[in-house]
Image (cartoon, rainbow, N blue to C red; front, side, top):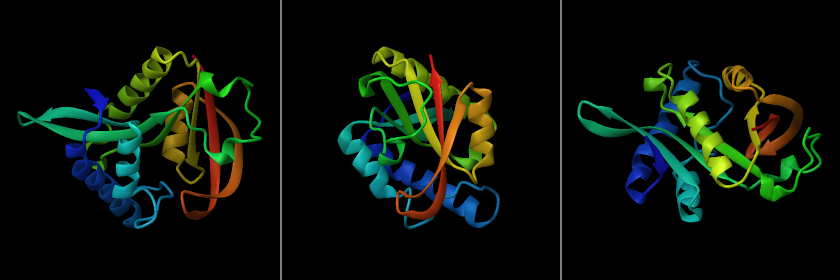
Length: 176
């Protein structure tokens, strides 16, 4: 199940961020995020305050557990400006997914695909037929995942992103 997050979900979201940072630090994952910089508890709290934080839950031993999270909104980050987007459309027709993360303890079970499908349906429900996502160029797993889902890489922008220096940000786009 995917739903808007509540304050009671913040500890679980922060725990998932921690698990991702640990996986990155141990070499089990290559995302390009940095503990203490992004994403952190404050990332989730800010998104919760804006009303655009979502969680994915599943039943584990009879208990509902947060297994994934993402931010869904129409806020295109400054790096998107001037990018060679295939579709030149008004901002109100674009939905953006930020910071999709599935707990590494449950990876490979289809949660990412389920969240991406939810994102597309959510966008359509808001009248948005143009989807945008970004990821660090180092995150080859995410790049392959989005390609399988029909997203097109339209460019790579060198930048500082979410406080992380020297990022090569891959911009992806899809029309639905």
